[in-house]
Image 1 (cartoon, one colour):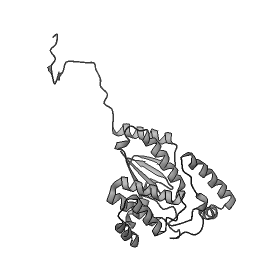
Image 2 (cartoon, rainbow, N blue to C red):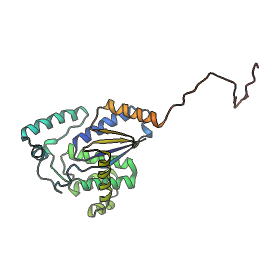
Image 3 (tube, one colour):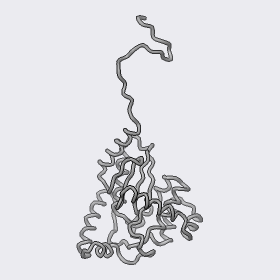
Image 4 (cartoon, helix red, strand yellow):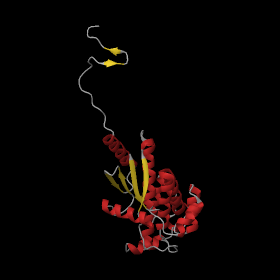
Length: 238
């Protein structure tokens, strides 16, 4: 079973949703047969390469709210994240571009598969939300990528050019084709779509329903009857 997750590395609900899905997978008996792949989604492609303005101010302006009101909303999110074991530093986060982070996630997927990509995804989310680092900064990205296990020379090569930019754009286009207008957005076996950081119980239900449909249980009818087996054939009346 494959789960594709459209998300951004500066999306706090994406981090919360990641933890909730992980909890559901931890209690799922077929978790070893579930492949999780991350897809790109840029919340703000027009964001500056090196962020300096705090995200709180940017969001307040975008949604026409005062900074105090926006901060109050963020405080509620911080409390929700803490329930998932995440100590987010939302009030220190800067508004920054994420396309380069997504390009590295594609590099990780191509060179090390979903496992390496997940390591890098976690590293990038932790850098931004837990340490309030600028994930548009190439030094921050390089440190996260190499720390996750990517080849340093290849990371530098990708950051110096535009490799995987088309793959990022293709992910965004696919999200739109699915009708996703925000993230996180989860797609299971290209059949089930789930929007938002749903409760762990919803992910648990999703996993079991998708598994049951892709691995139907054989329903036997009738009682026992004569048959042949490794020890020979049953003889009626014997």
